[in-house]
Length: 437
Image (cartoon, rainbow, N blue to C red; front, side):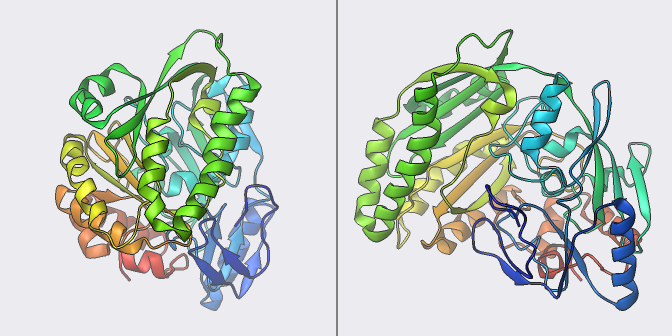
């Protein structure tokens, strides 16, 4: 794993960013080239070993946990080629570096999630997404990949291949990604508008707001009837920058330093949590500013937490939001984090959460070191019957049998897995649970 401000951890002991997943590898592999990746996989397969590629450790599931051979791709982080709006990079490149490289070439990704610490390989393999009316996951921007299969073969897959719908969100089960080609867009500026509103008002006008804005998300504060709405839309120029002080206050001190202190207080004295949530919700203020797209999409997240996120059909948002207060009120502990709701368009990637439908994502969090499982299980029990699909990198309790019902192309994906990794060189306990043995 990599921490936000450190070099990759090359010791055998590994822990993810959230601190809830740990593993001790028998060996750590640090290849410098694609050929080295292929050679290490061949050696492992011949000896009956497993290999698990690990990125930045920002998944909360055990998807990257390796107790045999752990492979780090932190030496494969270079730009390979720029051809118009097609950009090829090595798959170990972190998103923050990718965003800087794209900006240097007058390009950008059309949508991003709210952090930029993940590697390109990790982001696309787990279905990382933002909130975008006209776009889906980051993987939907992928037009080609190079990967090393379970036999050590180096394989190039593009849209002409029948493998293409599977490999873009491959969960690390089909091969080790070494290069990724992304279809980008000309660099653009966003006007970010944030405003507090009653939750009922947000929900009553939700369809119109989603249709009328390129990027919309909202946060509901538990134990209150208040929400914060974020709208991001393209504008020609960045003529309304935040002052340095306002940027530090709004995007660093308040959501990180102060919020962590309040979370620690709530963890020590749970009775304070509803009061803190109410004060925070009432203290929200509106703001508007312009900046480069990736600087608007991505924020600094230093407060450690655990997360579950469920994709649901967009029309189910009112039902889920109506049920959440009852779930939270019935818990034997307090919920300290706001509930985040985002929206994406459909895509055709087989194991993408947004496959084939207009989607909403409901994310629930808990501060690290506080109880969470009853909360997350209750949210899952609410979303699963609605056809909900859990985010592959966020905590959930589903298995292959239940996930098959949620993904129309689940068995097609398994057939590709059988073709590319019949020996299960890339398997681990998480993949055995969600894909079967």
